[in-house]
Length: 237
Image (tube, rainbow, N blue to C red; front, side, top):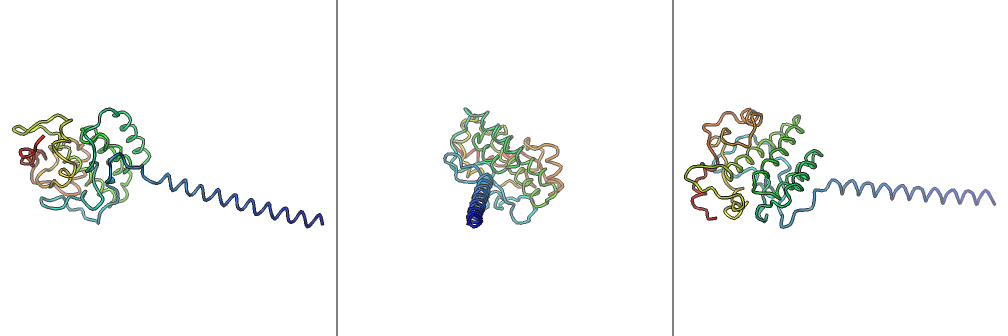
């Protein structure tokens, strides 16, 4: 009788241990999935940052072509519903961006940069994120080229918003978001052949070298604001 009771007790304990292990494994798996999910969108934020690379097309951007960043569901760092430039939480968003970048969570880092759009610091930090992604994917040509293309377009957009060009308006940083919407910026042509790289001050020497290796030398170099001068002359603050 004692033997039977011991066997039953052992069986109950075994079942209990199996159930506890199964519950623990399920919770561990759920926590791992939760950690891999992107941060919740910012207030009034509906568009995610650029992530998955498009089809393998390494041709340079051309005038009249649909911008690579305008594939459905994609943008660089701007968003249709972002509020005016934010400056009160500069330290917080920048620290978040750096932390996420160091963790290899590049899309989430770009989302953090959105908080300061369209300030120059937002573009500068986003460029750092993209360079980190390029280094991380140095062995993956498709991913590396995708991020390199995004970096070029980011630099061109920064040039359009922040360069000073004689004869064109030079608004304060706080009025930029009122003069242009992110959607207007995202749909602008940024052709490599006409813009080149010398006037895109967000690009480093290493960035320029890699772009030339990818697309070859451009026909000319100019500021994106100069190239799209008509947009500035017809826009209202």
